[in-house]
Image 1 (cartoon, one colour):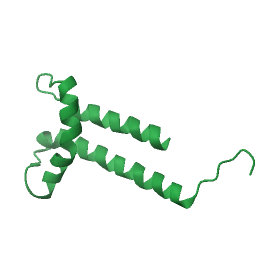
Image 2 (cartoon, rainbow, N blue to C red):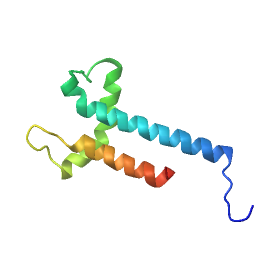
Image 3 (tube, rainbow, N blue to C red):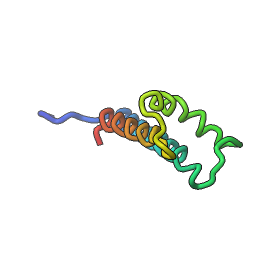
Image 4 (cartoon, rainbow, N blue to C red):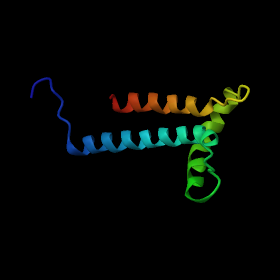
Length: 92
């Protein structure tokens, strides 16, 4: 085919799975941010995994963006960063 790129099944699977994993990670970051307001305790059981998985980017962002009053914008900033990465990597 002239001028058209063919997408293989492996590439399509990579893009679909990669995009879905990043979307799930963004949802975990949002859960981490909203948990105190929803009275969800992330310290026990399977939800402890959410805290452990989301701590590294949130702690990194908190070095540059400290909590402002009662609001901590590190998690939404991390969601924005992951969203940008997803858009750049998977272009959709």
